Image (cartoon, helix red, strand yellow):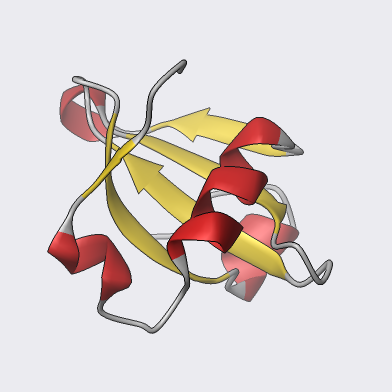
Length: 77
């Protein structure tokens, strides 16, 4: 992902754009989800782990503090 587009929905939980970009650049884990959606876990600039949702067009549509299900390395539905 060379250039990162971040939608307003990704900003809903108050995660700063710089932290979103940092998490994507330094991703620790990623999981393919449905419909070409990918979930990424990576650190914000302060080290807090974030979950970042990226659609099939490499547009970031979700960002928040990483929930346990992603920190444990598995998806739970």
